[in-house]
Amino acid sequence: MGIRTALMRLRQRSLTAARNRSVQEQGQALVEYALILALIALVTIGVLQALGVTLSGVLNKVSTNMSAVSNP
Image (cartoon, rainbow, N blue to C red; front, top):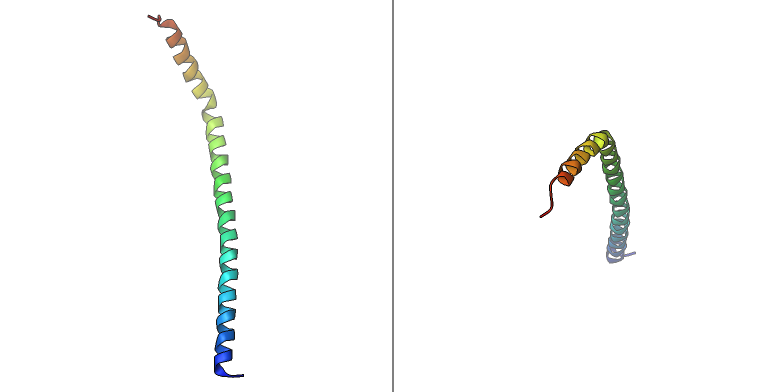
């Protein structure tokens, strides 16, 4: 086997390895984004549940005050 053939095989192996790594990294990034989105959803749900009663009271007060205002 000549040096040229060995270099071509080495180049081909390097390109294949780079492609495989790229596919694995894309899948990993997708999983990371999904985990971040799930965490944001959980935090949002928790905050809304904690503030839900207070926010409901505020909105009811605003509604009551607005209904007391006469429409022109």
